[in-house]
Length: 377
Image (cartoon, rainbow, N blue to C red; front, side, top):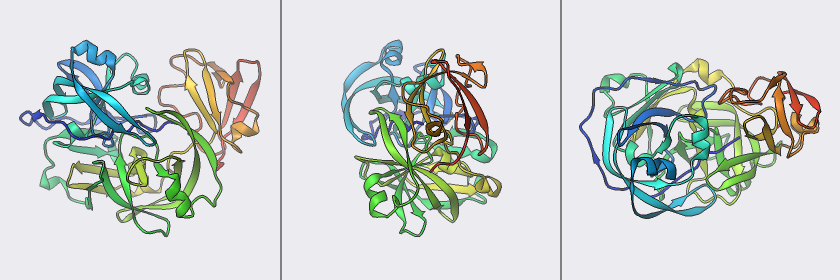
């Protein structure tokens, strides 16, 4: 289970090209996608751009920067969930995505191994708000598609509800969200995260949210791996709509200036029109709103290698824990099929199936275990 790297820094100066013809929709599979992404061109080089509303700067790896010959222009301070880092800045010539083209963009450089692993064989980058703030991001989960464009036509707003979109001290896009019977609180809209809800441990403790069944989970970001608590929220209100049985990851040493962070799965029942620095328009799909939110039911936190999955964390009281799986175990086959580049399929979540699903795991040390997926927090 991962949480996305947040790069929260000040905006850089750049120029935006003339609006292009209305771009075509880009399809995605919300059941297997780790990230929302669009095809992009970086100095003419085709790349895969991960859309990240929680990142102020766009981010490239050193390898990709070397390919396009970008020159260093300084450094910037990046604030993640739990730490702050100084990252080098590079100026790129041109970035194109959807109906928008930007020139002279100053981007941050950092290791993007997690992102690149999701798109094998493609160059990958993070597209942050330095690019997106001049665009409209439209994401229709009801039809599994998204696009980046220069405007949002008035005739298209029928059925949408307008939410006030503020900005935190760090420049994060903020809406109001309400947990159970608590007062409304500031929540970051972070479409670069694949966790439904992440929150500050201090906020969770002060709000009395930790006195309920819980377990732990391993999450990974730019800071490295961290173990936090996971709980279930009975209700989370976004606008006029309520999400039920919401899995939430509680992070210690929280450094963001808003206590809640909502990843793209939190908006999986909505169509979104993201007009940056102004408003967020949402339109709910009632069928999707009644569907259960994605959650882990195995208790396995693993890192993928070529021919095995290395178990990095086992959640207490989970099915994996009850079957004796431990950190360091190597899973070499799933349901009798060897682990390789295609198995498990990219984006497949081992514990993401429904309650009662049985999964056979073969371990390198010769043991086979049968997991029956269950809710455990």
